[in-house]
Length: 96
Length: 167
Image (tube, rainbow over all chains, first blue to last red; front, side, top):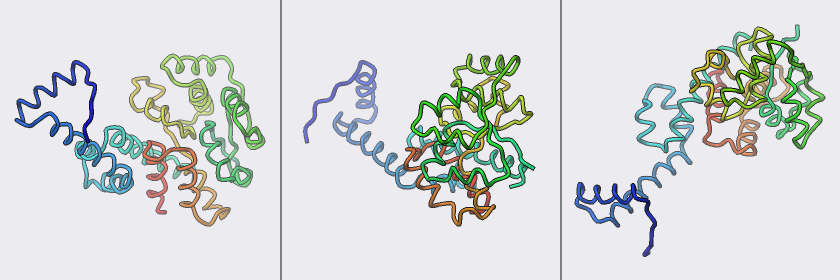
């Protein structure tokens, strides 16, 4: 598929720099970016609770979450996990 | 003895989605909401939620505290819930508002940092312990999908609560 894309000034500059650094074509760089984005989205969509479990067990660190998942999903796991664990203490105090 | 729980509208709407509101009358808690939450419920689709809660007006210092939290960009409902919780000597509220959960963690406000959050899963847990429902995950999944809370802090926090409580 051929596509025309619009880039702002920053993205254009970064793409140019990436092309020089990696010695790849712009098309290949964009294909790789889409692939990375797709994989992160699919991981989050299908396995969020698995990643949460691994994070809660200490198998995955915060940094690893950010590497494997989209930023918002990684943040959701870190914030939600902390909030949920605090909630357990309150539930216990309330006699439940 | 009945204990008081300050509750945001988000958690009540969640219970309404799975038709569990009526069970609130059978648990040893009185749900208290501030006027802003009453307005949110009245503006929503189901006013019968008000049959299961007690509205408490805010006066003097409590109202001032709520307004000071609103100054930090906290929603009026959540701000009033926090102020009411402090008034009742609680350090927590029941809330499933994603924005508030994030704001609480990232805020530098001392009062906001003191407040902790329980979600709708706490009610599911209480209903289960009181033998009013026979399982929790069916309701959990329905609430998460009907409220569009997949992949959010709300889903993770409530899931963690239930898992830690050995479900």
